[in-house]
Image (cartoon, rainbow, N blue to C red; front, side, top):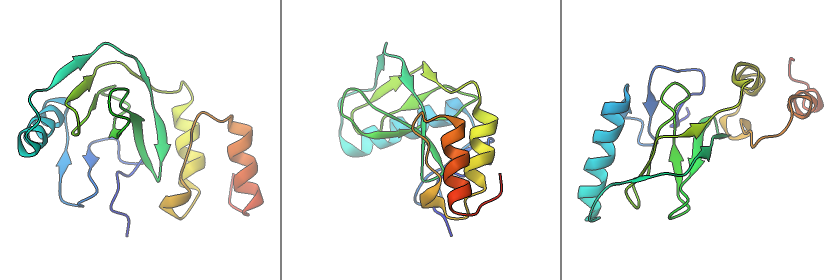
Length: 135
């Protein structure tokens, strides 16, 4: 059973503890504030940078430019909240062909093989064919 965000579930983010679920940008910001307070970090802060989303083990994530942590993100929200340094990114870019990327990755039965880091669709199709998955 996967403990990660399901890329097929666009309604919320499910964190790796398999309990924490946030279903809106406001709840995501609240979750981050709680994490920052728990860790004793001085403050949350807005970053002006634009980040690019990728899929790692079936999760839409991006990388915090301030501390290099992997940060959950959501296609509808375009928001990333770093729980390690307090950065808030309001400009996360997702690919135009997100539906096809998602479809191809969901053909892969194991969450750890559902990865996309900007490669072309033909490459995803080729990887699926190599492993005899539907396309």
